[in-house]
Length: 175
Image (cartoon, rainbow, N blue to C red; front, top):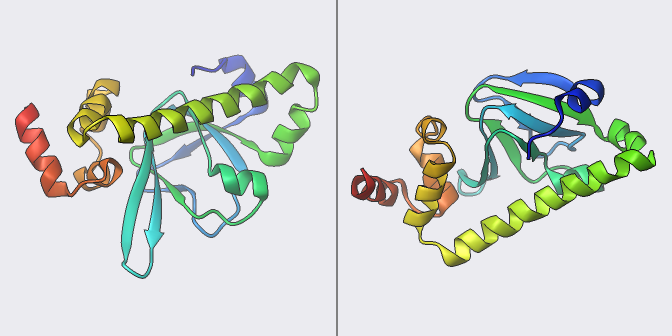
C-alpha cells in the first residue's frame, strides 16, 4: 500500500533502524505507528520457559507496522518487532495520530490503515489454512527474492511453522 510521500513527510518522522534493532519490544507499550519504506521486519514472540522465539509475521516495504493491540489498548506488547535488514521507516506517535484523525479529511487514513492491517491478517490466516509450507515459501520468494535471501532461514522456518531442516528440504526441491 504505497503512501503519499508528501503526507508522510508532513505528519510522520523519518527513522532508521539497523539490522537487529527492535522497533517494538515485548513488555513495553507501543506508542508509534510505522510505515516501512525500506527493509524487512519480523514480528516474534519469545517464550522464556522454552527460550524459544516464534516468528509470526514478516513485513516488507510499503506496509504499516506496529503492535496493534498494545497501541490501541496502551498495554505492554506481547511481541517484539525486529529489523531483519536496515530499515527506513516513517513513524507517527499515537497522540499525534489521534489528533490528526480528529480532522474529518484525515479520518479516512485511519480506515485505510485498519483495512490494510485486517486484509494482511486475513491473507496470512488463509495462507496457513490453504497453502503448504512449500507454497508459503514460494509466495515469500515471489514478493522479493533478493530480500528473502537475506533473511536467516531459522526465521523463515519459524514463520512457515516448520523446522529449519524441513525448510532446507523445500529449498533443495525448488532450487
